[in-house]
Image (tube, rainbow, N blue to C red; front, side):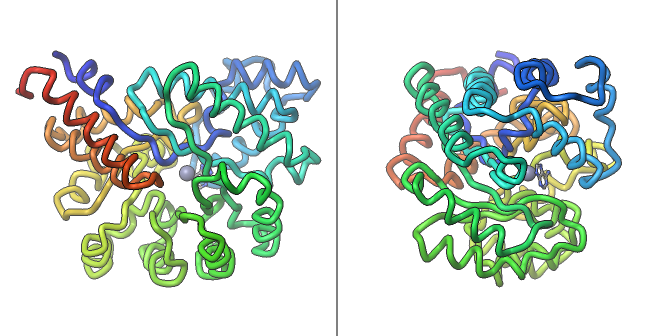
Length: 340
Ligand code: ADE
Ligand code: ZN
């Protein structure tokens, strides 16, 4: 069996993907037309040409411009369902998707339409495809902490359908520590937590996300490799890191994938996972990310299986769900010839 078919059928979780970042140019134009939103590009192809980013902030400008076309409940439903269908094709059995309500409520979109659209798509994808989708509500770190707290209050009517809370947005000069009250409140309300840290920011931001915010997972976290003691801490506590190789490449976090730290992170014993982040902007869904690191970092079949197992272990699921996911990996491996 070739590596692509092997990886496609290997049961996996995706733990770091932004619903807004799955909006493909064709759908973006369709939604703009549907909602009568003017766009600065004449067609989807010109928009694709604009996907050459200098850094995270440059990317976020385009990403937030794209968010402007998501206006109605049906729009949130359509983009979420399209991602879940695509993820299902890639062998994703559990998808934990970020969504940042502040991008939309600040433009006047009612929170009911945002949550209703995403959650109805999760239900439909579960019924039709059997994929287990889950929502992670994300706050913007470049906006005030009080706004994040208000946003959290506003989604409490859907508390039973929220798998956790996160923190994203422009990282440079926006350290994690001020968001301690946000994460303390999340935890006090019984939610799991995760924060973007060490994507463009320094290893100190990763340390603060662990020691000050006390999050369950770190999104990206690659900068941790600059601090040996921090790596020891992350290994000891097996705090999962949701690494996004093609995202790091496209945002110039690494000059090429063959020098991406993922292999060294695995060798150090970190609980790393592979994810797509914003697949429509970064040129690859989760399977593309697995294939890229297999090719560029020469990761072995065993290492790719470790990454898939880590993704299940790190999911915000109850222990029975994790045990079931790991059994599905074992059953799959037992059903195919041994890896070469
Ligand atoms: N929001 C969407 N993608 C992001 C990324 N890569 N980093 C921080 N915030 C984001
Ligand atoms: Zn992200």
